[in-house]
Amino acid sequence: MSAPLLSVRGLGKRFGGLVALADVSFDVAEGETVGVMGANGAGKTTLFSLIAGNERPTTGRIEVDGRSTAGLSPDRVCRLGVGRTFQIVKPFPALTVRENLRTAAMFGRAAMPNAAVADRSTQPVLDALGLADAADQPAGTLTLSGQKRLEIARAVATGARVVLLDEVMAGLTPTEVAQMLETLRRLRASHGLTLLVIEHVMRALMDLCARIVVLHHGECIAIGTPDEIGADPRVLSAYLGSSA
Amino acid sequence: MRGLFASRVWTAALVSGFAVLAALPFVADDYAIGVGLALLMWLALTESWCVLSKMTGYVSLGSVVFYGLGATLVVVTWQKIPLWVALPAAGLVAAAFAALVGGPVLRVRGPYFVILTYGLAELVKYSIIAAESAAGTASRILFGAPDLATIYFAMFALALAATLLLAWVSGSRFGHGLRSLRENEEAAETLGVPVVRYKLAAFVLSAAIPGMVGGVMALRSTYFVVGQVFDPMLSVTVIAMAVLGGGDDTRGPLLGVVFLALLSELLWARAPLLYMVLLGAILVVFVLLVPDGLVGLFDRSGRRRVAASKEAS
Image (cartoon, rainbow over the protein chains, first blue to last red):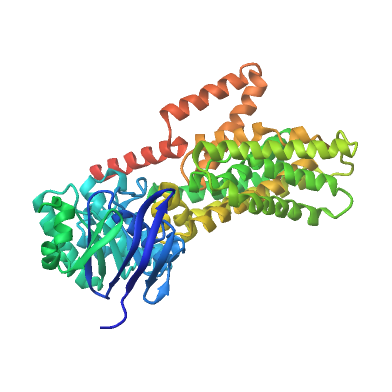
């Protein structure tokens, strides 16, 4: 196997006296999909914020395609090929859906030189996420499910090689989850994406991911295939209590 | 927002408006030229203000600091360095000041930014007042200032430059980045927009022309009192004009400036006592009932017309 596309080593983050993340290490190979699982407060979103540059790590290293990115600003990390979605959606509400994607295509790794070229490049992403009909309406008027899809569309439209998906299926109906899984699989194939996925919908994780990283109170307690994770005693005790 | 109705009709109106203003000194009396000069001054200031505040949502209450710095520079260098050096230097000083304070100032958002820019302008004002009184100068008079027509054309050039600047920013990749960070700064940064650099660039760009405007207006009044050239009412008026105009392209400032400058000219003459009352009332009505300003009104009626003609055909 070649060098990993994303590599995290001894990553830690402290907020004052609170240890949000401690000594987390894992690799993600190009084209791989890795899940991140853990209870609320386990440090999943902090992990994403560190990788995307929204937060600066207290300890540890992050490498994207061999380049160290820890401590870089989010816009530089984005231009190096990392896209992320926000669990609490952050659209540009007064801009149209197309203009939202235009920002990503012009300023992300894709670096499209002007609006016309950017819009042409984002059309397939709009189509893939079912946003084409809403392309010219303000993003603020989308439903929550639409805004979640917009988050994914923007992250992909940056031209990212690694996309961090933060609970993009939370709040969706089972039918919508099934559709979303299908959409993600198609996007992954068509754009050659490497995915890191936070999800509480277990079926989605099991279905999509080759490997899963389990966080518990900021520590990484297990890494393995979905089957291994399902049988791991530490994971079971963390989720079901020590008697299980 | 930036629809098809807007562009062509608008460009025609804009070009003919500037043509009329360019011809004014050749046909009008001094009073009319004075009104035209005021119009051009507000236009230059408001278009510049929009480069930062409309594009990024960082509402600055500090326009006057750039104006005042420019005026001060031109006055203190009067008859020491030639005017064609002093005026660009006024712009440069204002821009340099913005670059210097921009880093820390642009870290705060919303009401904090408003207050901070206001406080900064007052700080500079009182520092210069202190410096002037330490030097023993209470006020200064400029002898041998250029005539009104020359001043008018200098201001015309500045108003045109400010309009072209905002037009360029509004339509550029840079402008799209600014709009994105206005909508959500964290999302914009995560999508690759270099927000810190962009905000600072917008701040510096919005400062240069007001600096030169201040310099030109110092020549017009020929009488220089620090408290007057740093009058916070100037910043407030700029915001009022931008709010009345609405939108985030060149149209808003122009509509707002023409509307408010002409209205205040009328009111001053007809009802001087009611002037501020009416002005306040108009501002309240606009903020409450027409939050997207005159541009919003135009666009809505434009869209209605387009829709009606579509139905008819």
